[in-house]
Length: 611
Image (cartoon, rainbow, N blue to C red; front, top):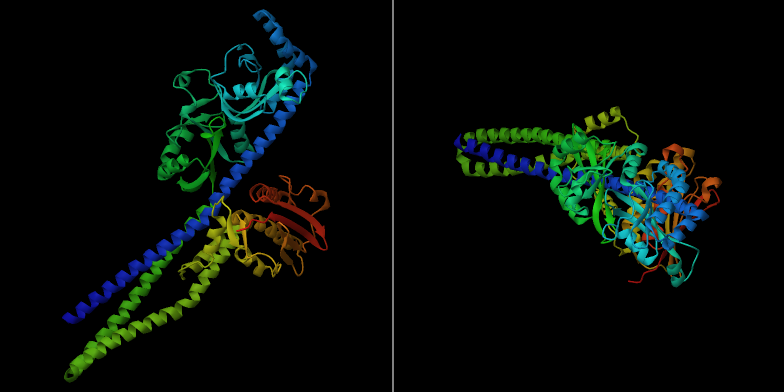
């Protein structure tokens, strides 16, 4: 019985070790799988924040340009500004200042409703002539405070960007004002009168994202942007407090924020990611993380704001959002680990019992065959190994179908995540099925990790690789909706192309997914997507054609403009806009669309870069 007990301990030890190793492998694989599924969600948060930020800045730029033009087109304004250099006394300047204020005060009131705060005239010597928001404060020297005014006065060129003043930071649009139109540099210098600042404070951006897009946003400003004495001033136009996100930054408090909630509570909630935040802030690039807050998962996204003077990050736009997709991914990850743990625990228990029962049988046989003890011992050992082999074979056979079933469950869950159409009942059903099955690997995880990998660099990539990845990413939809998907290459085309693969794939996904959505909405029979890749002189041409009925004529010419969508309220109107920005700005090409035959034809042209 001593030998039997020893065998029990040995078998138990082996099973325990195998159990631990197996659980460690599953834990590691599921962690990687979950992080890869969460990664595109976080990257999408960054893209969304960037899009909203850049769209608002573009809108503010256009408004500021119109306000500037309407100001300089008032003859009396130019007349007053032209007289400033001719004044001899402060009293004469004061008369001109009051006259200019009276002319522009109604205009300034209208500008305030559009979010403008500073409507500010600064003379050539960098001294304030008139602040419309503080008309009683003038003649202060801004040479060492506002780099932007110094730049415009010295170069007679427009300045746009983030800049800090004495009491507030803002997104500045500072224009040179001339007595009359000039073309040459010398004429401009002679006709130059002053600089005009039309600025939008950061709280306009915060309130826009918080109110319009339901994204809670606040603004962090680096302590070094102010002098030590500046923090003691009582006339700051926004309240500043130490931020919970980073010790080197101050949070700008607006009416939309509650000090206690945004500073004290957040400091506790962010403990789990505070170290990574410090690392990413030091890099000065956009980033996003998730954390748990009161049993909910939230994303925290940082977008850097650079000061034009030194091209340094001095501020961050910070956004908080609830994220049900990440919550679901983490819950499923937990469920999968628990399911595997208990399933394998039960399996190990049965394996152990079978082996032990066989050992008991072998011991009984050994007692009855004492004459052949040595032979029996050998048979027992052979029997053990045979049983172990049978068990491994049985496990492989019995688990093959459940593994396939779990793979199908995960694919269905991912499809529901992508489409955004799922219910608790469906998730519950999939989760129940998952409790009885296991998955060791995710065959598609490699393709997804390569597509979402943030890369700004271009590299030489095999053309077949690019379109193979594209086909892998949309393969589920192609099969689900019986779509004929055809890719053709010109015979004389090079095997490799220098391109940013991630960004190009993003453009192709936008176009192809739009076609698939149209197939579904219009219930197109025999849906077809055809891609043709050719080379003409110094350009690659990629033609994507479908039979989804084409783009409505009333938006065909504006399809690449922001907020233009064929999906009505279900679309953001940013897919084609971002595609054009990527093709034109990042890939150096162009994109066009026409309606022909039974659908839309997108044509992308990219420059040839020799290896």
